[in-house]
Length: 171
Image (tube, rainbow, N blue to C red; front, side):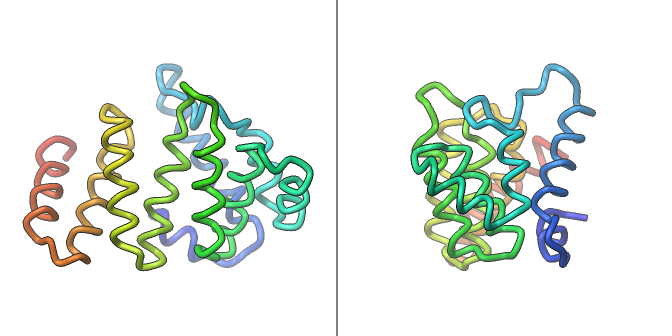
């Protein structure tokens, strides 16, 4: 199942299950694969994301902690509250230390903006991702989402170009 289908599944443990599946995939890919992020304490995100009240309390205790913002974004995503999930994840990117790698959170922002129907914002976030992470292993997904945003914005030429690139380079 894809990410959208998994997020649509009911249940309070969605965010934690998605995170664990992502960790499993990374482990299967081997030691050469970067961690989800070098700046955000992923074990804290996993712990907090499974419980919205706990994630909110942690953010009140540590308002400048990128892990707390990311966990809250994940918790909101678990209940499909994109209006709150996207800003929380975006804030985790802003707070991440210089030289860190907040790819996962930025990818999450792109997906969340698409889910909210904010296609121009999704396109801008995807363009940022493509500038900052041109060699990312997440590149095919981001190019696809950028093409989707272009299509929704009636920019068929850009959508076609991006999707043809995905097919040519990654299929």
